[in-house]
Length: 196
Image (cartoon, rainbow, N blue to C red; front, side, top):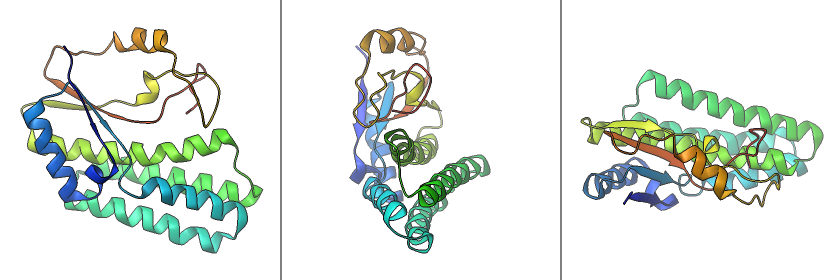
């Protein structure tokens, strides 16, 4: 039997919540941990998309700054290393770049929406990897991009998983060793590796 743990947004809300969730993992010892975006982030990302379509850049930047500040505060609270901080910065840059594009076009395709919303889980899983690594130094805590194993059809915003493909890709995971995988909920990719 393979144990999988899932933590929602409130369990990823801040440094304290992440450490508490990491302590739960030490007791349940799952092989895979699935996390949601930090509490409120998905709503902020949806608000960002709406604002970028219907308003100006000056109204978008405060939302980006709030998301950035929240995640950087967690990263600093966890004493994240320079590699993690660099990866977080790249994700935040990706967010800003997409938001600028939406502002210029005054529209956001379903494909772009999926990509932007994925950033919530991609950032929280990165930070939770740090929290768990600190609490369980005897384990190898590996960040697993869900898009590499959760394959779906091309229906952006309402993609359907393809179980046969997922099973095939999951067979490549090392589920018998000292590794605990941290991955993201609610995201996948199609056969062209586009985020769904």
